[in-house]
Length: 376
Image (cartoon, rainbow, N blue to C red):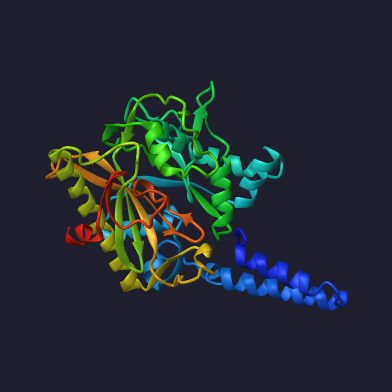
C-alpha cells in the first residue's frame, strides 16, 4: 500500500518526539511507534480493504476513486458512455518510482517490457493512460491551446525506426499519483483518442483564473503563457459530487467562455443536464451496491465525512448529429472530490480558486446558483 503521510499524522509524530525526548530510549521508541501505527491505521485501514472492478458492484465497500478501471466498471453497469480503453499491462508502482528516481536499470526493466509487449498493436490515434492520472505533457498541450481536435502530439509512446512501439517513461505527475493511490499494482491502459468539439479561447486568461497570484507558478502582471499550437480548447465539463449529491457542474477549461450566445447557452445547459443525469445514475448504482468511493486523503479532515459519497467526473463533448443538441457527452474519467482546508483533489476549474464549487459555471464570469442546477 502507498500513500503520502497526512499533516495531522506528521504533527502527532512531531509532538510525541518532542514530548518523549528525555524518556528512556526503549520507552520513547514504543510511544513513537504506537503513534505512527495509530495514524497509519486511521488513514489507511479502509484503503487496505479496497475492492476493485466487478467486485465493487458484487460486494460493495470502499474503492479507489482515482482508479480509471473502477470507473470503467461502474460506467458500463450504469449505462454511462466512456472513452474506449483496454488494459495492456499491470505494473508495480515501485518500479515506476525507481525509473523516475534512477532511470532505467536492471531492477525496473520488467516494467517497460510489460508495457511494450502490450502495445505492439496500438493504433496511431490511441494514447497510453496510466490508471491514476494523465501525463503532465498531455495536460500542458491541452492547456496551452491547439490548432486541431485530432490526436495530440503527446501520445505516451513512439515508434522506433523498425516500427516497434515503445512507451514513454512515466513523468513525475503520474508516479506521484501512483504512489498516493493505495494499490500494490496498477493497470496501464491504451485509450482511443475521441475528438472533442473545440472552441476559441485564451490560454493566459484561463491560467490566471486557475492559479492564485500567491501560488507557485503564478504569472506576473505582464507575463503570458508560452504560445501553444493554436487557440482551440476542448468543450469539457466537470461534475462535483459531495455527500451523494451533484452540487456543481462547471466548464472544465476557463480558457473558453460558454453560453455567450443564445445558441451556445442552450447547448451548454443541455450538456450540463446530461452530465448531471449521468452522475446521478452512478450515485444510484453506488447506493444500491453500498459502494463508497474513497481516497486516504479523505481521512483526518475536520467537518468532512470520509464515508460519504464524494467524487468528481469529467465529460467531453463530441459531435453527434443524432443528438437533439448536435452533441453528446463521453466520460473521460472519475476522480476525487474537491476538498478545502487544505485544498486537495479535483481542481475547481471555472468556479475559480476562491470559492467552493456550487451551481453551474459556464465561464469564470458566468457562475449560476445551485437552484439553476437543481432545476435541470
